[in-house]
Image (cartoon, rainbow, N blue to C red):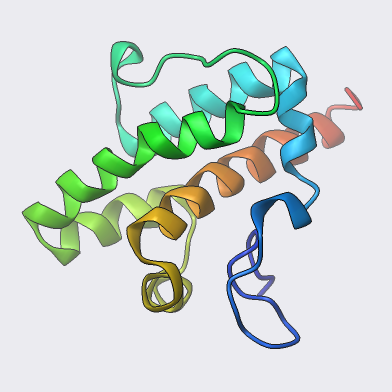
Length: 131
């Protein structure tokens, strides 16, 4: 199974920097950013007002991560199973979630959620011939 985003570096299994991933550059496109936010809303069952579309630019990834983090914290307060159900919808396997939590906590996991939603969007766009 492929490794998602920057969390599990295949060489040394450490947390790498999100900017090393290369996916974030796609958030500079308004269509990609809008669709990524829509995917996050769907996967995390969030109303539109809880996750607005941030401005396009270099800070979009961190803005989304910051918005997803309290959602994950709220889910974890409900119990690990509530968090696992949400991450199942995001498509982050349990083993990856546990590794991410050990290496970078909920902050890293929030970043992984954003990156996984972005991957889904880019995959759909690619197969639709839109880039």
